[in-house]
Image 1 (cartoon, rainbow, N blue to C red):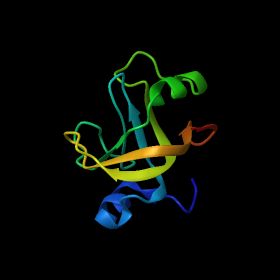
Image 2 (image 1 turned 30 degrees about the horizontal axis):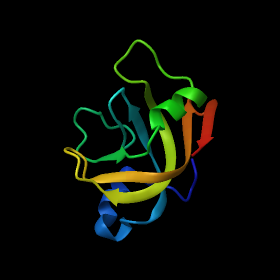
Image 3 (image 1 turned 60 degrees about the vertical axis):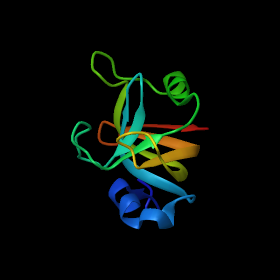
Length: 120
């Protein structure tokens, strides 16, 4: 992981001062057929209060074209990730913050033995 990245909880702790800023965030990337978001590493998707929704047109399609997805479960992706984009306020239920204008996504699997990076 990049030393310059911040965790999901650090993004929430910075509050409004981080809105509109380009940042690199590390956490668990959760992607289903209807939504994509980041949570704090080690948190559970169902119970995490701090979620950052990914608001990028074609995000799932771009990921599916470049990174192998998981099959047989509720999520296409449930991976340790680092994603760079602009933090924005969100008016979507259950999500206080969003991430848009993405630049890069890196997914780490198998204790960092498999690393997938894509640009947007």
